[in-house]
Length: 214
Ligand SMILES: [Zn+2]
Image (tube, rainbow, N blue to C red; front, top):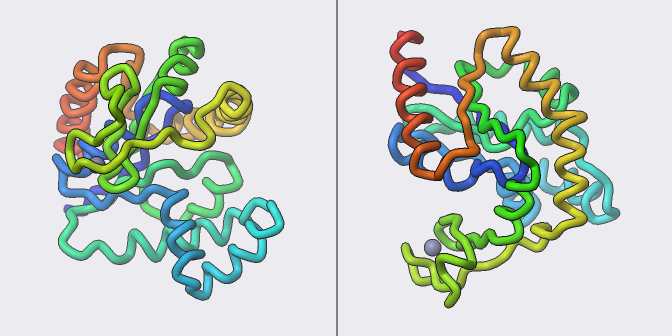
């Protein structure tokens, strides 16, 4: 059985941390949309060249092109049992463009306390090498505990960008989640808990969800 998942949630809801672990546990290809787009541009693929024409002048890459890139990724699963897409579709336009993707389930990391998210974002560090997500308070020396690389703060982890991204999430992404809810695909997770408990809830609900898919 191929497992096809999407993970969605507000900025700071823990998508990076949890997707990394879910991908390992269920042997899924972890498809990070932003990373995939950047890699195509860097490798100057055909789609990469088209996307560069937009990004080089500060324009958004049209949804259909982003989705084409994703399609290439999910069609090439090499040894994985499926995939988890982190983070798309983030608006209804992308969801429409993904209409021929089969999505079994959508993990929704639900947080309603946006102040909690803001604190998390400003404290966040990420490993550029192995993608481990951690915090300044936990690793003040900024050395990745997994691979020894220097941990970085994402350039867009600041208050202004956070406010913009929360507004976008509420206006554009919540309607997508509601739509998937109507389709009965959403696995709702209380992401206001401790990281450990969030992960336990994901595994528990995902196991049951996958059992029902068989
Ligand atoms: Zn690392």
